[in-house]
Amino acid sequence: MKEIQKKILEFRDERDWKKYHNEESLYSDSTSIQLHSCAYLHNYIMASIGEPLLDKHYSSYLQESPVYFQFNDRDLARNIRKLVSKGNGREIDDTIENEIY
Image (tube, rainbow, N blue to C red; front, side, top):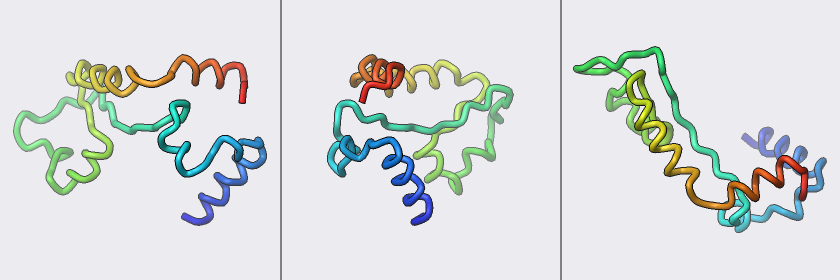
């Protein structure tokens, strides 16, 4: 883990981005980007009874990274809409696109 953190800090410092990052702004700044994971198994049809991928053994993983099956596309779209409907997405997009730091 320390090696990964070291590489991330090197990446940041090579681009002179340190001035934009501190503990507070990294997580609460309106221009920070939050990543969310999920799995969309678009070719996988969920079993009607006893779906093995939803076993309680995997519950902690599924809370962090939900799984969407073939016919759950509307649930996936709703979740994406909920996650990206707030914030300064346009401003962040422009910053990335135009490399304005």
